[in-house]
Image (cartoon, rainbow, N blue to C red; front, side, top):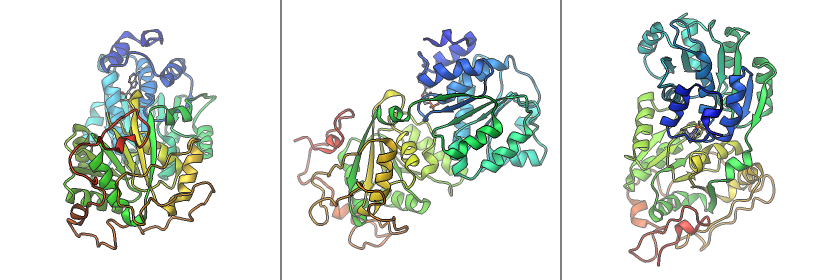
Length: 443
Ligand code: AMP
């Protein structure tokens, strides 16, 4: 069914077409009519499914022309980047309307946001922190909010924002429409749903489909000491265009980035300890291709929409299986195939087991041909039993082999254990091939 048959104004159909959308995605086909009908909605859908337009288009449709004064739509987002991204989507989809949008988030001086609020916006997209700050200062009123959108609610739960969310919900008029979007539906979500929604329509877009359809998964098993060398070897072999390397910790992300730079890779870094300006610059550099590698913590895993990420590399096995789904969701978006690789040590077998159970499939172990594995072959990561491999030892992560100290530049380059055994030639990259085929050299 084309967009024009969903009951949207032609200005919004044109807005969607201007972004290259021809057919609604499944979440859009289901959510748009429900939102247009004024229903509350709980939708569980991964990012990458088109969920932003699934709420933005019908909400823009319901607003009519611009009205000065307090916002009539409030969207809450867990991170600054998501707030910016979602406000951009509203603005672009609504480009043929006169509706005004505004994004509020921390990490930047409040002055310009305060001034913009005075001019008035129909739609405000905000993180919870900055919104509460502005509410406390009486800089914004929520008594005109007719539509409240709680986006990425599972992430807000994880980040401990739920009390803030509840406090904000209480300040919105009871007679409103509420839309709740979440990639996953943990039990706690039902609690906030009961609190904030009335007789919601439930829409679920199958998780298994979302996870497996366009992504090739592979695990490279390796000892902790050789993890970074394996990462370098992978990066040397494949035709990587745009890679996100996920690290569990901020410190780990900084160290990986530091050592990748030493190995002459152009790297952007994103984690919560970086300033807002640094985060914006990192994302812009990665999106423009100036840096082909983004090293990030899970802050970058949720929702961020970067076109054409060819590979996601999990440098650490995520402890929470849902984080795996979010991380790999950065690739394989919008029906383009992508590769999700995970470097796993025997100690991480338990976490690997949890992920395989969660996504309902086992992930193939792929040895990297020609890599000088300590002991001659990749270690076994037996995830057949829950808890296999025992708990992960935090802080044990080391970069480089053989007790190499941090900050010893050059050793990775000179040792280059992952370099192909014979020189010349280029790695073959098949985006649709079997996992692991990507790393085989053309002979
Ligand atoms: P989201 O899940 O909202 O983050 O969207 C993921 C990506 O899909 C974004 O780049 C959107 O611009 C894109 N997208 C959303 N809806 C459609 C559609 N109907 N057709 C093609 N691309 C879309």
